[in-house]
Amino acid sequence: MLGVLTVSQIDALLQRHAFGRIGYQIDGRIFIIPVTYLFDGTYILAHSREGEKIHALRNQTEVCFQVDEITDQRNWQSVLVWGPYEEITDPQQRYYALDRLIRKIHKLDVHHAADKPMELDIHPEQLLSDDDKNIVYRIHVLEKSGRFQQHEKIPS
Image (cartoon, rainbow, N blue to C red):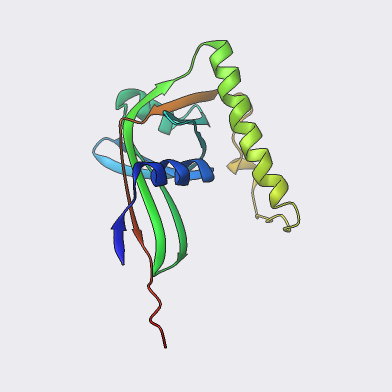
């Protein structure tokens, strides 16, 4: 069965998760990048190092954000939200948003603490400089949409 999520189901899915994808445009090319986030009911809160994505978002503030919950190919939920990118520059608001985001991520990390950490083969030239400025931003959720598929078991 395919269906449409209600507003409360959309909000619940957004609040349950901390990993989503932001879609934005650079020179007519679409990019979709994974980000860690927090949904507070009105905004998607996130952070990033200053770089190509942040420069693009400053130039074209309208973005799309997506979160999925996939059990298997016949059981899933997917949410899209649209709204403008806004940097949080007020020091108190910035601190508060980042603190809430870190607390949510930390809760998830504790939950997965028993998992063996993933080891990557990373070369020093791949690492970002610590001099890169950390930007805290939000997406003002002005529109949202959600769909689902749920497999109906046929009685035997």
